[in-house]
Length: 219
Image 1 (cartoon, rainbow, N blue to C red):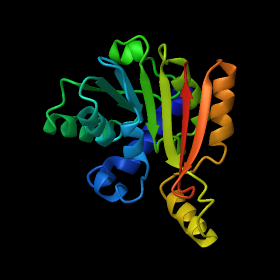
Image 2 (image 1 turned 90 degrees about the horizontal axis):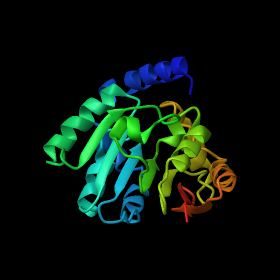
Image 3 (image 1 turned 180 degrees about the vertical axis):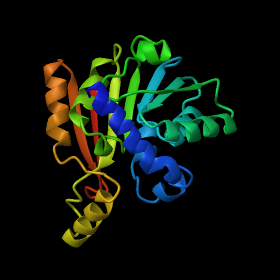
Image 4 (image 1 turned 60 degrees about the vertical axis):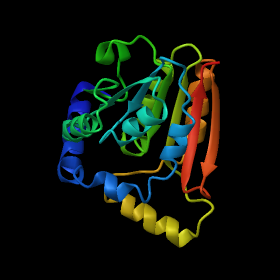
């Protein structure tokens, strides 16, 4: 994402979340399905590094740090408003020594510049691609920075393919009010990124297509 566009996107996200961040986790826990499954499957190596792209309130980072106490966690978000809440949440959880936060752009982030690490063992994206304009570029960047035996894990809204059509129509209309666009081409996009880099891609619908899970692995 170009510098001007990234700045505008940051301002837009701040405007959306300036008030929402205070009740974001309470409301989202009922419909951001698959996040905890992703966290349980992270399995970072002992002493490994994990980066969350679009960390929001740090809810996922805190949960992951508790599940995988031997790893170090890093998160960044383009919204400084969200990061204010994230920093407070991490401090309240007593995990400031294991979770590091920064402001960054998902399409151009540099782990070394942001966090001082060369190549993370795990990168994950939880319900963030549906809000990032250059979501394909975000997947590509996540795959590029992976270390040896690294893995990129993604969970986001699916196309509701196993659910009633009326449900899909209502959900998509509601999501659009928050600038959320489920990515219908997630599977082929992830496979294209993987193939271009000699990596392995996987894809799995969850909850009758309510959510989709994708991954890219450096074998």
